[in-house]
Image (cartoon, rainbow, N blue to C red; front, side, top):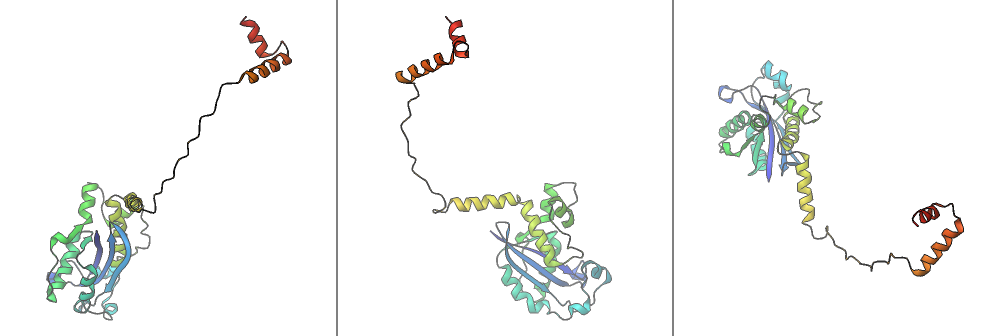
Length: 232
């Protein structure tokens, strides 16, 4: 099962009031495990950068001017996504921006059925607990020390680890790996067992005579002699 875990950075909260996408980060996962394939792109929003947004992700308008616009990069983005589901934390926010940008270039939008919201999964799994990305990283002992500011690719990579844990954790990955191995013909081998005849355990007449002679040679104060005399 192929899915794309992704995150976006923007100039604000609402594309319908003028905010724009400035960064996309995607991580490909199969059966909840990262494959190593990523897609990452900064985007020129063709507008200024509000101070509040700059404090969150650190991308200035001057910095973003050197990158292509969404109309220039969207073919590569949709090619990477393909027909996979889109996994995001608070997915409605990221999907809203992606779909608005797609609508502006004349491409069909992604339906809500394509989205998987890890925030909703976390809320169902841990009701009443903090479920921010940082809180979930702490819960699952995922190192997020490099997350000084928000960054789309870093956040997508962290979310991919969180998503694995929400879906059953690394043990699930080990189980899938074990299942895959046991179905491989050259992994499991059997060997013919060689059975031996059972060995005799009763002493022979000759062994009994030798044992009696040995006990007599030890003298009357031995434990065996004492037991034999007491039983007579």
